[in-house]
Image (cartoon, rainbow, N blue to C red; front, side):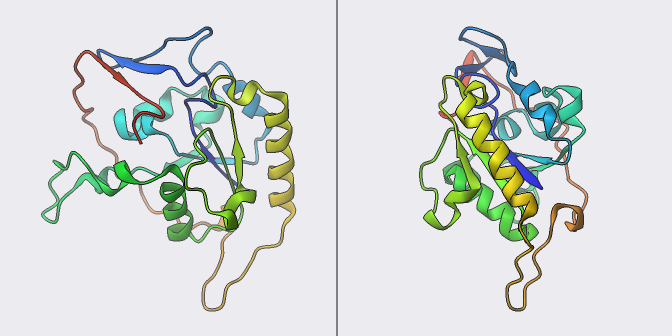
Length: 205
């Protein structure tokens, strides 16, 4: 089972900002205060579908999660290679990922990995295809995963998807999470420089 995980508006209120390169929550509570609620799903692997992976790079974004969740992260919808030009130089400031909707970012990963069992939890429903609506658990950006109704829906979606049979399309194999042919992830070691305060979350796709 794959869970595409947004941070802002899911694991804490959608009021996170980068101040001098460090995330700060400008709302009551603390960053990732609702993350422990996901600890009850040990069978689920996580893919980061958050602007944190773009703005802080994959490793740093992943390492903000509690250790129990960090170990279950297998990738992100953002990849450093997306910022490279034809010659392989990483100097592209705007990429396809930056202009894509959250759904498009997730759908690209799903298609490339041929996923069958997946769910996304996010506070950005814009552009979500009706055909994939049963894969989305939408949160309110102010209360995120702390909403009992949202948590109940997530449990139900994960249970149903886990029990569903793997769908096979003609000429195309569909994989369950344990069968995904994942290659090595190229990670950036350098973090992009930030000045003053830059918002992360819904304001930056």
